[in-house]
Length: 357
Image (cartoon, rainbow, N blue to C red; front, side, top):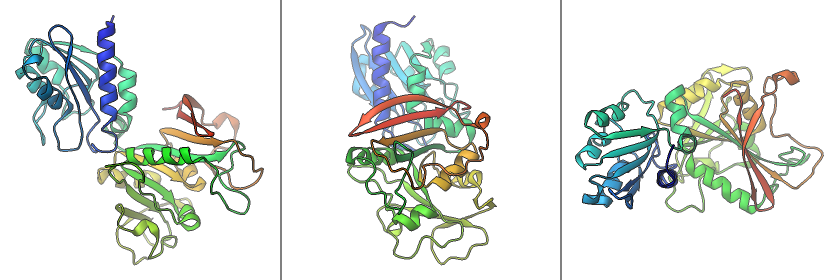
């Protein structure tokens, strides 16, 4: 059974890993804490950007000679390959660490094997400590490796009766200022923000991150099947962040930066869209709207997490958060597990995951 000191150190490593969200793609977020031979913390670090030093390297640099005989707590199994940086398993061995505890095994076949390398060098290795917490913070990267597509988080804001706008189409503002600021945090953590043609027409959204210093701007994606919703001069086409317009293979457009995808039903193929984004290095998607596109993603089984901001407002009429998702009877309903409920301003933010996942 893990000692409290081990749990405290690993929990700190998970906190450190979260600092890299939105900045490390297509690499994972990783945190590391090193304690000396007597158990005192002497170094910590996290993977700060793709191509930069890994978490273990930052922590070892801070620990210096005090790492010898100590323990390294890492949220992901230390890598065992040489890419843009060297193998972290070897760096830990050379530093003289006597024990390594990691939370999640590395599912990447190119990088796995670090634990075996450490054991072969006489290092004591433990695994699985706070595995659920470490998986949660790194869920986007883990999903991309395990399923070969980006992790999809669907975000919406609605009234308590499930309306995202009034009958006349007005929707500013249903949610609180605090909730809208929180959405920018979600954008900053994502590699791409995706909306549909209806949202593009109705709102002319900007989709860039605001109010977060040093945020890496996500790719702005508009699913515009007929290539008619995004016009020259649209806010999404400015230089605040990169933009990609997804259109049908047979659609005509003069816009730059488009990707042509096969049709599916009344829109585009969701799997094809996710494949195209994955090929561009996108490992996490924030799906922001609207209800038709959200329905297509749910129908395709491509929603990994739902984040709903529920405002203490009633409308009684107007568009709902989710349109046709291919569900025709209660036995087909997509059941969710609620993982978090938080008060955000005057609203309630509910986070949930599909049980089938």
